[in-house]
Length: 159
Image (cartoon, rainbow, N blue to C red; front, side, top):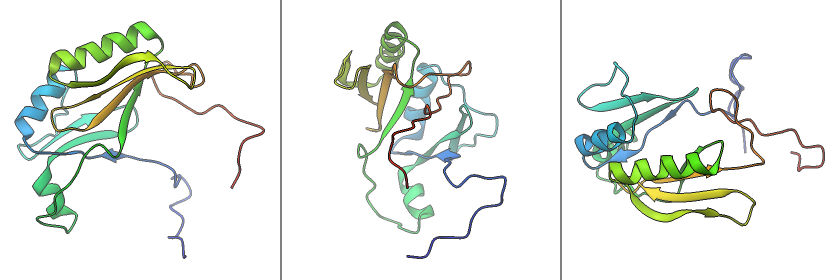
């Protein structure tokens, strides 16, 4: 397999800049994210809603339009095979963020609870079925802006 050429030296290959969940009803999706406390960016249009995140952008786009943009017009796009996650500094904030999502219209999949890996997390689905995990992870410290960076490991896998 041939890898694509390296990006310019100042851009790392391992990065995500835009996440675009396809939605069936853009107005309903906008209302959910607004009611959950997200603020749309001023560059949003009637066809797409942009939300500036910490170092990336969430873009809500109609599912049919997304399929067409992918060159798969008419394709039935699914949900749930990937999880978006928001880490919080503690259990109380996990509960608050999770409950705010439910109040905004999310469907609870699993209430936050202590989990096998040593953290505390729960899952909900937004009105289009996109799955979110809200978690507190004692092994993943958050910086002052809520960003996460994996701690260095000396005995982990390489390559």
